[in-house]
Image (tube, rainbow, N blue to C red; front, side, top):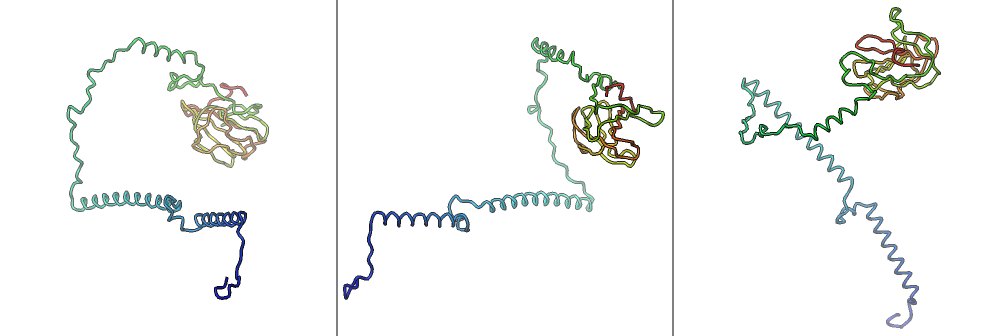
Length: 269
């Protein structure tokens, strides 16, 4: 009201609903404004316990860079020190390698190496596990024999050209369907993948006991040099690449100790 005329200037009515709506709206506006400030403004960095992710990332990068610089400076100092000793004709000081005292050396003379009955029984049990194992035996490794290996046929098909070293054919040609998967014959490591004008895409695998398997005329290679493969893993796709081919087939070779062998003697196609 006006103080001089007592005229009513502003009037409003308070009810429970009006107070609840005004207070609720004010609280919602405050929450939204606080959320906006925390999420989208740099003021959040001043809130205790609220860290800046970007700043932590930058600090971590700077820490790694500082550590790398320290190591590089240490190597540079060592290099310059070596150069200085060489220029001055001095011998580089060797570290003081003190001989350990007798008390710090463990005493192995009083150890008991007698084999207990339990140890003998365990050895017998372990040795008998592989007695009837049909897999490759380590005792044949180094004897130059591959008869103990069980080869996995790389593909099923018809052998259209046999093994004939006299005519320069050091493998067999297996006719198969286009785009069939070729599989590794033994466990091993891929030692060569490439392409030649005569035989197209080639992949070679090094196996144990100096055995190498070669797969030629592929349309695509599924493995890269250096990869380890298991017997039966797909390694290539049957194709018709190269000049020395007359249709989709696989030229398959097995080499043992640098000598080509007939694959048909070790597997059935």
